[in-house]
Image 1 (tube, rainbow, N blue to C red):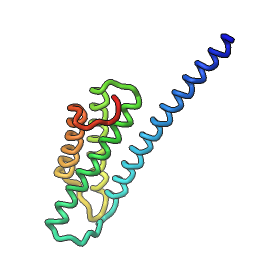
Image 2 (image 1 turned 90 degrees about the vertical axis):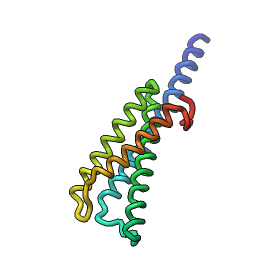
Image 3 (image 1 turned 180 degrees about the vertical axis):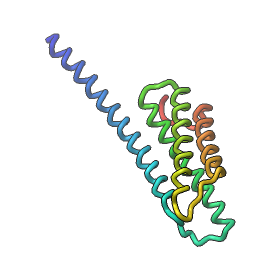
Length: 145
């Protein structure tokens, strides 16, 4: 009887760990998918929106802001699955998102018709820091923490 209880306990722990591992993998897959999407968009020589210069400028910065807002949310969710402290999760998410923003601009410098600009990195950084600030202030609830 004791052996059966021990088996049940270990089986329960194993299943719980598998559930957490599944969420962990899912969250990191979402991060890599989104980072790949950003990489794909940065590799396009011209998105061909056909908008006027002012609207194209506005759309470009809005797209950058949205891309890195989503990336930061996804990074926070992925790092949280590692059961780290809130401060550590936010620091890691910010560092990874900023590193990706810089590498994205560097990647754009090799694409014909595209150029790497400091303004793009600043917009990306603004999005990253805004999400981190909102998460730190608990303005946005990212599930139980």
